[in-house]
Image (cartoon, rainbow, N blue to C red; front, side, top):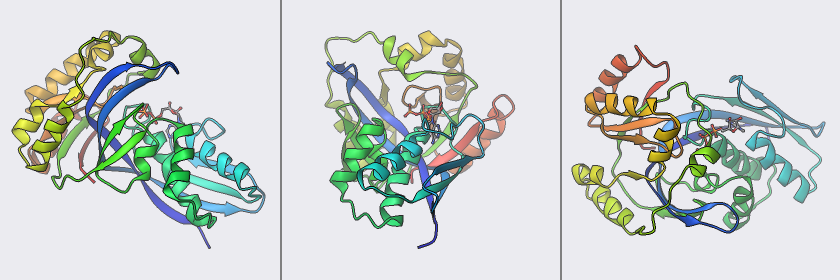
Length: 285
Ligand code: ATP
């Protein structure tokens, strides 16, 4: 079989509640993942020399063992004693280290791709086993769905059937935001409910977007703003432009808001691109 060309999508979190800290250092969360149509392209091709070679058009993406796609290949090579190597060409479109989980998506896409390329016939349980070892956000991308609930550390996935497609505007400021710092700055409150996500899902299913907007939550927000107060200004700017309930995706720094239509999103993008060079209008995939 010759190479495979695959799409590796980004995600945003419309809901992210932190429940508690676990003994293993991670946090238990409840999150609603939304897959969006901002995608990297990944081309996978076997090589006979046995090496894992990564080529990427983005200078900040590691091309060695630190690349999450590399980790995916390495685990399969080891466990299935595969002598073939693989060339991975990543055409990066998803902003790096933005809270959009581009690296996790690349790893999941690579697992799915190698399963086909090498004819491994791995079922979903086995693929999940590998995905979880790579990172908390990887399992979501194994599922072919637009929406999913993430529990545990975000790695326990339940597909959610919502037909509504949303438009969003994304702004990615040039700020480095490390997830470990954001989680480190969390001040956990004792009374946390995890059931409100069902209210959000209900309104999304009914296409009650006004109501849905009121249920959007990101518990990491205070910590993100404390680390970088300037991000609050960007959020306010989006709100002024009528991007309702602008919020952060994951641990940021991506700020995003819902827009009523593609046209509205594109109009906002024209204004925002005067100040920010990474602005995208995306839709639920
Ligand atoms: P998350 O929300 O899961 O924390 P993120 O969107 O904040 O993810 P990524 O774009 O996945 O961040 O990248 C985070 C870091 O991971 C980068 O700084 C980069 O060094 C490293 N990385 C490893 N593999 C990849 C990859 N395939 N694509 C992008 N970054 C990668």
